[in-house]
Each structure stands twice: as structure tokens, then as C-alpha cells.
Amino acid sequence: MHKLSGKVAIVTGASKGIGAGIAERLAADGAAVIVNYAHSQADADAVVQRIAAAGGKAFAVKADIAKPAEIQPLIDAAVSQFGRLDILVNNAGVYKIDSLDTLTAESFDEHFNINVRGLLLVTQAAARVLAAGGAVVNISSGVAKSPYPSVHVYCATKGAVDVLTRSLAMELGPRNIRVVGIAPGFVATEGNAASAAAMADYLVGKTPLGRVGQPRDIAATVAYAVSDDAAWVTGATIDVAGGLVF
Ligand SMILES: NC(=O)c1ccc[n+]([C@@H]2O[C@H](COP(=O)([O-])OP(=O)(O)OC[C@H]3O[C@@H](n4cnc5c(N)ncnc54)[C@H](OP(=O)(O)O)[C@@H]3O)[C@@H](O)[C@H]2O)c1
Image (cartoon, rainbow, N blue to C red; front, top):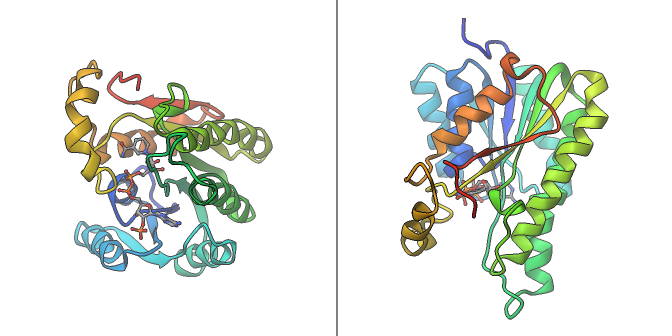
């Protein structure tokens, strides 16, 4: 019997990077997983295939969480495919360089519409069907606590995510639904592949454990956060960063 047998999870932004790693780990722990994506159907299908090949259950669902009309069908897909919903992992996010010189209203709206509004509206829709004993995990970032001036807007979105982790935990606690934040350090993913070459030496140099993180490092803490081992953990954001302070 696996730890998450009988549970159903949605992972937003699970076609790549950290989200794909989380989806594969939750499936390996026994959950049936909805693999959400916005554009990359082939990547999402590949994640579903890897899960199935390993003996797990998964289903890909296209939904752009920046578009409110696409959110309810994502939640409905979990219930129609797998009959219930126990776990929501709010992972989908964007990060772009935005100094005072370059930031625009459009880039502000893009970041906040995905990283904050999308996260909150997905949680609102999920909360209507989440089972007692369920869990919501919000993927934050170390930059919420140690922000960078070259990414003002991104850092601000993750600060907002940490506040929502606390306020949502207060609202959902009486229903025995926990809300846990996870703040990764520097993790090698498709999304930061271009900047990784330039940033890796600098960030690894600031990381006490001396290496770049991998999606499986974050996925392992998500697996803990949604399990009964974390039954007394809510409203907190856990740093998973090899000790890196950005
Ligand atoms: N990588 C790091 O070092 C790092 C550090 C700290 C925090 N984080 C956080 O970790 C999360 C994942 O980062 P990552 O590096 O794994 O990103 P990534 O490699 O760029 O992958 C992003 C994922 O999010 C999906 N996505 C983007 N916009 C979406 C939307 N509007 N609706 C639904 N899905 C959407 C993408 O799907 P499509 O391809 O289909 O668009 C993709 O699956 C983000 O919240 C990020 O802020 C990352």
C-alpha cells in the first residue's frame, strides 16, 4: 500500500520542470494525478506516459490558469476522471527579468494573473470539492524573503503567495484541509535553462550544499507536505533550497 493510495491530485503546470517532477512523485506514492498544462501538450502527454509506464495513474488536462473560464473545467476533470479531489499543488508560474527600467503594466499583469490570481482562483474552485484531510501546496520561491531588484514583479508575486498560504490555511483549517508553501532555491528546469548557464556558478557558490537543485528535491518535500506525516503542518512555507539565500 502506497502512502497516497486512493488519493487524487491536481498539479498545475506539470508538463515540465518542477511540476512534472511533482506529478511523477505523487503518482509513484499512489495518487492518481491530473497533469495540467497551458501550451505544451506533447510534454504533458510524455509525463502521463512516464507515470503509466511506472504503474501509476495520470490524465493530462489543458487549462490556462490565467483565464478564469478555464479553471472550473480543470477541477471538474479531476472529479470526472478519478471521482474525487484530495490534493492541489499550485505550481504553475512564470518568471521574467523586470527591473525598473524594463517592467511594464503588461508584464506585471502576466505575472500576477498566473502566479497569484490563477493560484487563488484554482484554490477557490478546488476548495469546493476538496475532501477533509486534503492538502493544498503553493510553490513559492526563496526570492519572497530575499528579493532581487532585477525581478521586482516576480518577487512580489511570491510574497503574495506566502501571504495566501497563511490566509488560506486559516480559512480551510476548520475543514481539516492544510495549506503548505514550499520555497525552492535554484532548480534546473526547462524554464530557466537559458539563464542557468549564466547564473549557476554564482548561485551554487551561495548554496551551502553546493549544487543546483533538481525537480525531485522539491517533489520529495511536496510528497511529505501532502502526506499524513505533515498532519500538524499548515500555514507555513518550507525552504527547500540547499541552504541558498538568494
Ligand atoms: N526553477 C527554479 O529555480 C525555481 C525556483 C523557485 C521557484 N520556482 C517556481 O516553481 C514553479 C515551476 O517553475 P519551473 O522552473 O519548473 O517552470 P518551467 O520549467 O518554466 O515550467 C512551467 C510550467 O508551468 C506551466 N504554465 C505556465 N503558465 C501557465 C498557465 N498560465 N496555466 C497553466 N500552466 C502554466 C507550463 O506549461 P506550458 O509549457 O504548457 O505553458 C509548465 O508546465 C514556478 O511557480 C516557479 O516560480 C522555480
